[in-house]
Length: 109
Image (tube, rainbow, N blue to C red):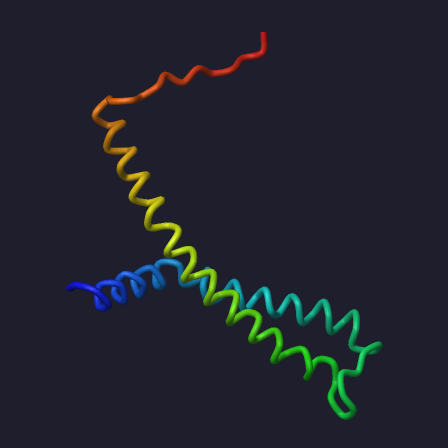
């Protein structure tokens, strides 16, 4: 596989590995926002006549979660690839014994 199919396959595998992080965390975050803001502001704010504050808040929270998650997933995938390659490179060099520095523990004297 080359090009787009390879990238798609890699991203689908990554999504399944971190499915709790990509699905459950945004849902929980949006529910916490909803509970806190609805409890604190529902009696004091009316967005539009005939629209309650909770009805006004839910679509915005849904879009906020969707956009944050979409950006976080794509950017973390792009940032993690070079870092992963660098770690693999560093680990393979250290396993050969090249460039390994001794670690000295600090002890209060």
